[in-house]
Length: 187
Ligand SMILES: Cc1cc2nc3c(=O)[nH]c(=O)nc-3n(C[C@H](O)[C@H](O)[C@H](O)COP(=O)(O)O)c2cc1C
Image (cartoon, rainbow, N blue to C red; front, side, top):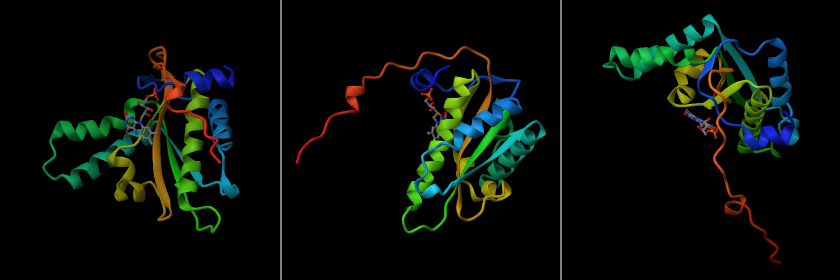
């Protein structure tokens, strides 16, 4: 798929099945991530790939944290947390790694990591894979971040659920660019 087609048509796909991206596809996704705009060449990102048994362990971690947050949590609620990472054969955890830089504010580094994450989901779509960017409480909880090895200078900016689409990609809703784009020329 050419770049403009992917950019114009990418949609999230939430029904994802095996197989997960293979090694070559994963490499293509990583190369796409690394081409995000990046002020000062900070490379303010890193990614964790979670697959197979790792997803089961991630689900256990989610359930453990959910129980610690809400001691009277019900069994079905716990099961929901445990099952979350099983919604795709692979999860790529996207992490923004920020550093002090007088020329590159914190927000720019977070944006850049977000752009890298967007590149991953767009590249996935271009290759016929399905992906969806998710966050939620489990992205921001300190205990989850610590268990995944994030440092104090790091933010978990997304869980990219990725795999083979179980359903065809739907057409994106029509947008009118004029709603969001206008011209400015005032002196
Ligand atoms: C930072 C970020 C976090 C998101 N977190 C979630 C989430 O936790 N759950 C969810 O259903 N969608 C989440 N989304 C939105 C989806 O990834 C998706 O973009 C949205 O459902 C619109 O669908 P589309 O990508 O097909 O246009 C998030 C998007 C971004 C950019």
